[in-house]
Length: 584
Image: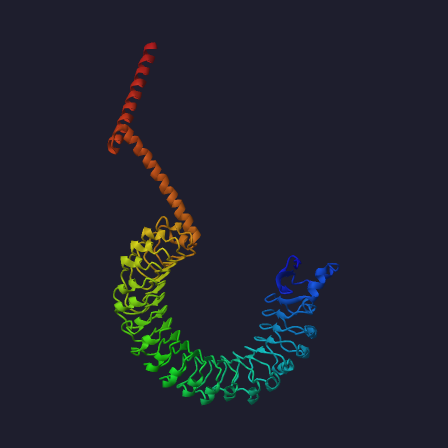
């Protein structure tokens, strides 16, 4: 078992000795090997030098790779990302056993030739460095490299030498660059399984990619693609295809030949229709079609029986295919920002549905059939045209999150007392309405954690809100509240309380701006004063009971006694004066 070396004050480095993970502390200005030399006689000194396989020295503000780390010759995985390193030293060649090297997010300009001597290196990340692109050719000498990440390095051309020599490459990350094309030699990367080209300047899918039949993941999000080649059907092992936020106006039928395709994201394009053969994608379980101009779906989409997630936000839909309920595996459905006037009855047959977003539609009613969605846990109906709370929602017993704010729709004036029927509700969002009061039955929502009522017309909170012991967030900004329930501080789990833009008096507005702790202290002091006043009043009443008098009679008696005592005092004073005169 490895012991722990400490060099206080220190930074923590994660290291692994013979598959045992522990921690090693090292001051940023000291060298680990100097500490070890001080323990030259110990067995641990050799253990550090010869049996450290993993080290995480990320985010330590290193300006260079510490010599102490370079001495760890058996190192297999080294994390130096997010530092200030400017130079890769020649001594990097000491890492003859290294397999994983992360140098991303530094200030490295040139790649030294010695990096090419790391023949066991399998994964290299040089992303987000101001690299001299000519020095990238050194990487071509690392013949066993399997993963290469060069994100965000302002790359305009991918080096041909890398295509010619990195025959074992399986992952190539080139996102956030300025690439417009790939060299023809990229077809040499016959073992490539994942290629990431997000946020570049491609106007068409590089045809060479279609020859890389081992590809499983292709990411070309946020480019300028206007079409996909018919040869895309050659990618027989393709599992994930990301093409969102391009300029695609159609999808070739040949894409439906990719029988293993499980995730397809075509959101944010210019599609008007989908290929009829989309039903051939039997393995598809996630489909993104949001922000297109579809207006209708082909009935064949309902044959995707494995489909688990379907995004149809802002697609111009007002109806669904009659057989939509055949998507029996669907658990997440986004139909927000469309033109539905009611929750489509076709949806109500999706008994596995857990998440349904119908925000920003034209709904003014909610079909009673919605109660059949027994597994629905998330329901978004914000920004519709409800004139009153749709009480059919109360039949959704498994609901955990309900969004019924009205960002730009009609406003609700009340919540039903039966809101407590949603016994599993954890989050309730009713912002941007015209609520003046909350139902006193709110306390029966025992699982409630988030209550968002901001931008309403609330004038008072029910005292029962203090019984929501699981509440963590209470958002009340921009209402008409002047006071808070005296026991609100009993909400011990409350983490966030917002009261901005309320005409608060009790507690005062300036105190509310100091945060929850100040509000809690105020409520506690107010409660103590109230309790003290109550005790005094109880004592006073006890005295009256003992005297057998009502409050007014008791006061009169006290006054009479006071007058009588004054008369007696005056009489005594007069008699004293008479006696004095007699003596004289």
